[in-house]
Length: 115
Length: 474
Image (tube, rainbow over all chains, first blue to last red; front, side, top):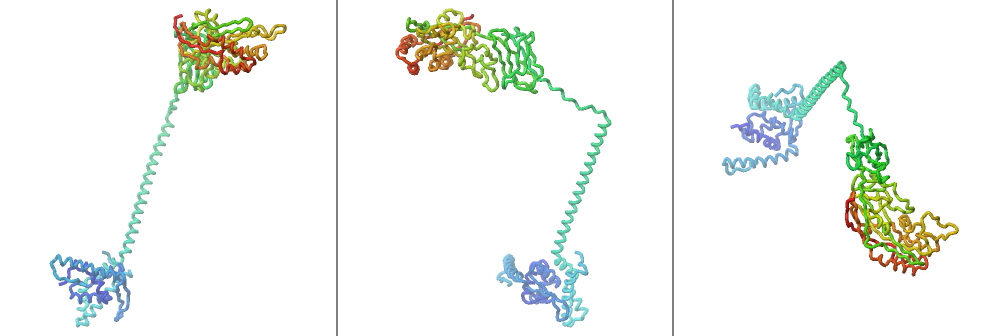
């Protein structure tokens, strides 16, 4: 079951930071990493990654550079900035507290922090 | 959301990024065995609408530029609004000014066309003047032909002279604004030379007309004196003669020696009488009270004979009457000694006449003598080897200062038109005046002896006590 867009909207940015920190650098690769890690639950459409990526870039959490792919196409690669690395850690803590609180309310026991 | 422009580099980069994603995805699917068409189709389905994603990304990228543009647009819009408002306001102001100019032009045209009467001329200011009436005692007794001087109040100098009409009235004619006081001559009315000065009159445009009624009646009363005992007179043949006089000095605030002006304190009553021309010629320092603003002092130096002869009233300054009302009076008894080798002679005898004994005293103890000389002056002259009185070293024995000394004065009231009888108690010291003077004569061998003795005790000056015994209608 795919995650609803409303839930995904709040989780996408920490997911992207985490995936990029994990080594994915360009859009398709990032999408594959999310799909594989989440079991295909998070992304209803891969295109939704790009607005989020560009927002993070605009906020200075990501920096990008263009490079030729092995196939000879122009490809945009992302990586975390120092601010992005710091924000990633903050988002992890915030998400952990948030999900713990939500889980408590929803009666879900023995839930460990996601990260 | 509008479509990003085709030639925009930002949009181109977004498209390139999305194209790379789609192509890569399709290649991966093809590598898994899907046909090229199906791979591209599936890639599109998994990605979503590339155009929508491209626009969203584009506007995210343009966020700062958009905000800047928006701000610029808003600023320009505000400037346009302000410019428009200013233009409209200016246009409205110009239109209002044009309307006002047109209205003014129309008014001027109407004024020019009409024969508009000139603005009303302010009425001529009323001329400043002083009017009044002078009478004696009551308004039905006008003082006709009386001179009225209008004087400046600040210095008493006359600025105009008028003469009263038959009904006693006078009118100044226009005069300059100012503070004035009037001096009224009393013509031949006794006592001669006495004038009347009125209260100050303030004549200004706000109060252009000053009117005053002046009662020129010289209200007086007579004064008689009774002594507790006769004034002492002792004659020792071959030695000396001691004689005495009663000196009276009376002053009233209603009678002054000089004109009042605003530099002096105001009198306690108006009008005031001015008695300036009837001063007896008493010689030097005869009237030390003749100072500006001082009351006139009526004086008399009288003997036992004078008192006996004036049961109906004594004369002060030669006048039978003195000003009625409150006054101050002093009574002093003076005594003097005339050595036997000096003779009391009438003043017509010329001192130092050749062929005669020059030791003569003119008018000894007359009013003039008492007010001019010091008591004991004849004795001092004798001791000084002089042939006339010597007052020079006997200032302390002069009578005049004692007559004006407040310590010697009493407050009394002279009854208007009546006879005020005064009782004068002679001091006990007068009973022994002969022995006092005899002692002085025996002890004084030279002039300084007299002067020194008088500093210790003055046998020549004695204060008397005055009381009003009766006020009788005349």
